[in-house]
View 1 (tube, one colour):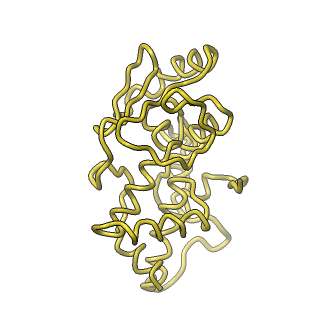
View 2 (cartoon, one colour):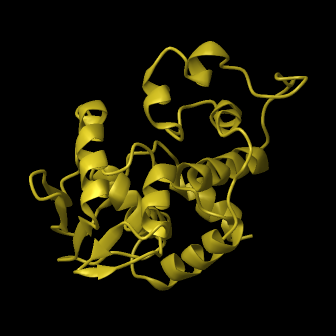
Length: 207
């Protein structure tokens, strides 16, 4: 599976906002956005206004990097969102929210979305009692998410101290004692935590 291996803090600086890719560091003064809010590169500022194409591209790249999705995956999600009823942009964001690695992060099992993805790919997560190592699995209403192994559970419980301030969205519920999560309902557009104009993404991807 393709993955980003370079400095992820540069991705936040490129998009001009926190994408929460480094876990605890993002909430401290060491966060790259706080220290160097300019885009990376030799010439961080460019003259002139950003073109319409540029704004559409940046929205798309921001969402991809926020959820850790590669281009080929993004195209598949967009095709699926187009086939569904309703607003394509909202459908697309809801599909991203339903990913297993995103739910693992939202349940506070992972310190960041990349960490949540790592827990899944390393086989530490079960869905409905069965091991699942596919981060892109789309969850359904009623799915149960739990951790596998006492060592993993112990490490996650120790990490709860640093994730205590993070709210769990209404479409998920968590039993902290047993470390079991439940998809109470499917997420809606209001549950999407990233600030984005999805219509710009649809316009870019429809070309």
